[in-house]
Image (cartoon, rainbow, N blue to C red):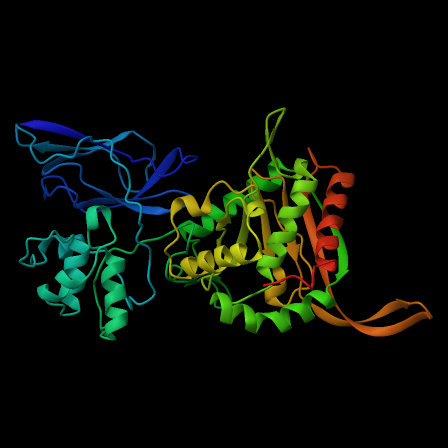
Length: 437
């Protein structure tokens, strides 16, 4: 007999550790090659870890909620002597497509016994316990499963694939008791619901933070401790920009099949201003300032759960408005569907957050570490403004908005922060309304 060590897979350049969420097998269980062994989470994404070999899970080293380093051994699988069914290496990589919590599941409970005892669907194709259990609950036949295209490793059928099939066919069960272990995607969406509130006095409730909220909390506190925050504000006139967008959005959608929102226009202005002031596109390492050559603009998005996700538009300065629009819409759609890949939320160098979405006129956002600045765009409102003309001033109606920039005063002083913010405003006020689309 041979023994294979299962290590925590690498899940991104900047990720050095992961938290064990759930073991789907227990010691003594038999496991197939590429069958899901456990679920792990980082501060960016959750992943299922497939088995690197076929055999018996003889030892579990890492326990649920343990934080373990990437590459550390967490389990041992005993295989046949010839190890004919093992993967090329035990230091496996996580699947490129992650499975996240999907709100279609009405009630989800952790029940390992149910998963291990579920009847295997006769088929030459491999199906994980998660997939088999969903199929059993939803009465999906083997022949129907065979028709579903898998997006997992080596074409493996994933939970998301099956749920997408259920949504399309409109055959969602209304009385699902125990389907699959809940998956939590920290960089995409929080747990389906917070823990049950416990009343302590009749007038107060105690609600335990979910894991995602704890991560956000720690990240925000760390940012405030690390960076001395300063926020500058300007108010700009975007009347010409608003009129152009109102006129062009129909043509734009007809030509490119994309909705034209204000976000791509904001991203374009930010990318241009960063090129003018590259020292805003930096990070700090001790006493060293690291100047980023790439301009990767993250766009903070609030999900229905209340948690945040920041997909990143890579090399935004190399894209025109059409290209940025494609990126913005694609990433926003993928975020709503919990289909963002780890690399799509990494390597941001500057962040944009649109507080105007909530009707707020301005905000003082917290810097997304290790970046040194974050821009908030407020709501666009009609206001009386002074219009300068050749025959004197007059009062008119303008479309006005506030921009606010929070920056790290260790490396960005008021001159740089204020100048950068003013340049972003200039690009928006001087937007080319005669450009071709």
